[in-house]
Length: 126
Image 1 (tube, helix red, strand yellow):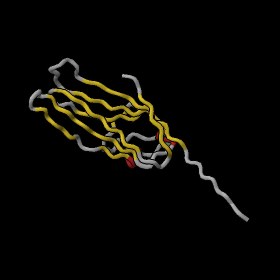
Image 2 (spheres, rainbow, N blue to C red):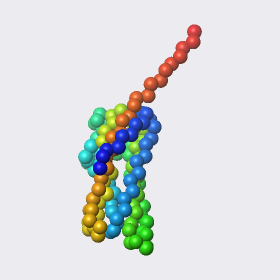
Image 3 (cartoon, rainbow, N blue to C red):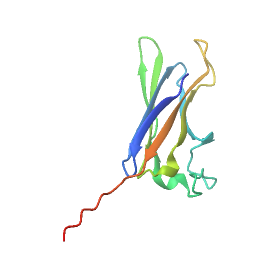
Image 4 (tube, rainbow, N blue to C red):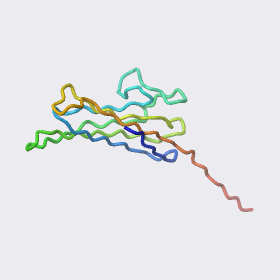
């Protein structure tokens, strides 16, 4: 799938939400520069070497079952708080399932985040 592009200003929180459908229910994970985002000691670092997970919140998966079709819809969100230019990178949402009734076992979409530096203009009056 083609990458999506997103832009934001430094300090403006951003939320990425992924929704996947399948049977059995898919599992959703997020990656930063190819590294899975989890709350472990091996945390991905931003480009300045700071732990990215100190500023990231991963929601729990919410799941709905269509009892008529037997298809699950799963949603998960990633929130990046107070992004900086160092967070300009590729994030990926990956949805996968162990078994597939309908053919595909996994799908992913990448999104390129570009964070712009805030410029503050000072006006001095004498």
